Image (tube, rainbow, N blue to C red; front, side, top):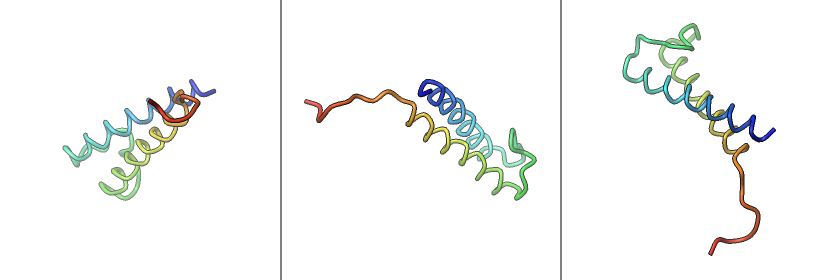
Length: 71
């Protein structure tokens, strides 16, 4: 289950970050979320939300070391 969350998070993060950068460089290109209402601001918010969701999923799915402090 954690591997699935990690992979899904990485995909969402990549799509969201790439869409955000593309949207900032070319305002007319809505990309994957081009049909979202709200114009530029709505599409940009959608891409940022995708990236944030990806970051949360990838963080939850990543392996963690158990134990105390390092060192």
